[in-house]
Length: 114
Image 1 (cartoon, one colour):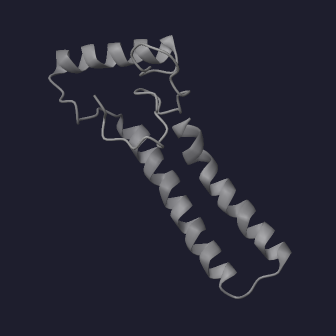
Image 2 (cartoon, helix red, strand yellow):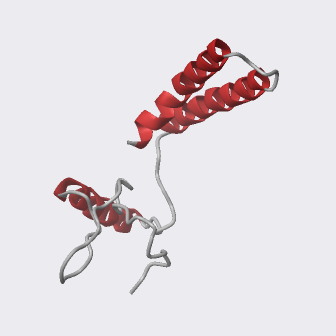
């Protein structure tokens, strides 16, 4: 009953996508990292049925989508800046500065993921 995953690929929580510990012993493999994720998934599936939303569809507020697009734009600009900065054989201080800028730009995106 595999889900197309390789034996070495880590299993992830169905709801939040956090890594799950390797299953030991008998029984069904875990699908959720916590009871809260299991409950959220149940509520989301129930609400999706009520609204007639398919499994591959997602409802998101315009504000959340706009915020994500803005954060991704800043991250894309940071990647472009850092690529340009490191192309000129930078010194250690330049590399640190570029890495700091890249991490600052990535932080909002990472915060929304976790």
